[in-house]
Amino acid sequence: MTTSPALEARGLFKVFGKNPRSAVERLRAGASRTEVSDQGTAAVIDASFTVAPGEIFVIMGLSGSGKSTVIRMLNGLLEPTAGDVVVQGENVTTASAGQLRDIRRRSISMVFQHFALLPHRTVLDNAAYALEIQGVGATERRERAREILDKVGLADRADAMPVELSGGMRQRVGLARALTAGTDIMLMDEAFSALDPLIRREMQEQLVELQRELGRTIIFITHDLNEAMFLGDRIAVMRDGRIVQNGTPEEILTDPANDYVAQFVQDVDRTRVLTASSVMEPPAAMVPVSAGVRGALKVMRDLQTGSVLVTENRRFLGAVTDRAVVRAVKNGNTDLRSLAKSPQSVVGPDEALTDVIERSVESPVPIAVVDDKGRLLGAIPRVVLLAALGNVEPTTTEIPIIDVPMTVPVAELTATLEAVSAANQPVIATEGSV
Ligand SMILES: Nc1ncnc2c1ncn2[C@@H]1O[C@H](COP(=O)(O)OP(=O)(O)OP(=O)(O)O)[C@@H](O)[C@H]1O
Ligand SMILES: [Mg+2]
Image 1 (tube, protein in one colour):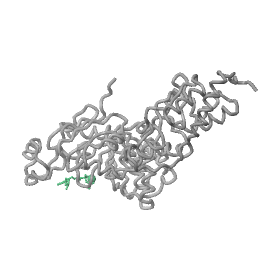
Image 2 (cartoon, protein in one colour):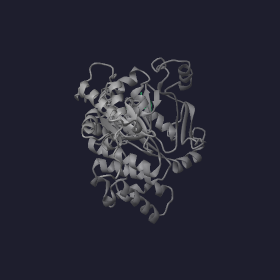
Image 3 (cartoon, rainbow, N blue to C red):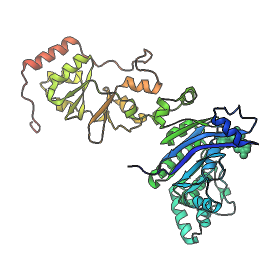
């Protein structure tokens, strides 16, 4: 099944200057931005990307890299020197002025960094402004604006004037206005950059939530990598007018296309981006519950490890440690199923590392990554977690050992093993027995 894209940029160029077309020819032939500077400023060079409906697509790059120029071409504010923009199947670049107005009204709205509110209108009427332009009647547009103001947490300020609001609140009115417009696609150019960090973070979370709820397609520009990583389903990294990498946050973080991107992502807060599935490993120490405590001990001995994950028909039951097994066997309990109970060490594949870390702190055994059917997908030993966070290979010697290995003396282990086999599969306590 293929859904048609919400928006497509095909080979976009924008050169400001005296001789833009011949600059494009030279850029196409491989000239750099500096090499064509005699003919103009090459703000955007051969940018192509596709944005799927409902996606948050982030364009990220340093100041002057061409982000705003790209986004202005997307809604027809700027005419590309070459290339095409296609919005929901319609070519913006070749559209007439009338068609363009129509596309903007129906399909695309925009939020800027410093959102210009109409100073003599209330918050409510500012939020309803786009609907007013669309010719929606006063009662209906106010009703719709009120709903959106509620979503951005400004319901109680509906009657305030813009001067009475803080910067963050004003920005939220801007967001509300774009949301109220009801367009499928929202373009946001540094929409949160003027906000202080706490409010900014709050707005990011709110945007993700609203996007999930309303299913809009969002193209978001930022020069802040943490913001890009947090918001983006996909991120295009721009440098000197070119898109140098286009991928998911994880791809950009774990497989940067070049040194430029690698340097960029160095300081990223990885815990917000990476998920359990991106750091998990195939479970090595694993045993089916039918193998019993003897099987579990044997796997631990063979793999020289202190714990093992227990499964039944590929479903994860729990983890057991050597200590627990040895202690249980001493007490006459040889039922592996009853020992394998460690709900705290289970995470889903999409869980953020922040949460995995929390579990990891509480858990002496590797974290089990389990799908929604309860099947074991992989394991995250603590050392792998540390490696992922520090971006070092788990094979280096730099990783601090933060936990004493959970081992018991070999002699005791062997004795236990022998005891278990000598007993020749003693009667296993059945469920419900006292
Ligand atoms: N109207 C214009 N006329 C001439 N040059 C322009 C114009 N608009 C942008 N430029 C140039 O194009 C380049 C890209 O600018 P753009 O505004 O797209 O960058 P940006 O990535 O949005 O940067 P910032 O993060 O600072 O907003 C810059 O060198 C800029 O000076
Ligand atoms: Mg800009």
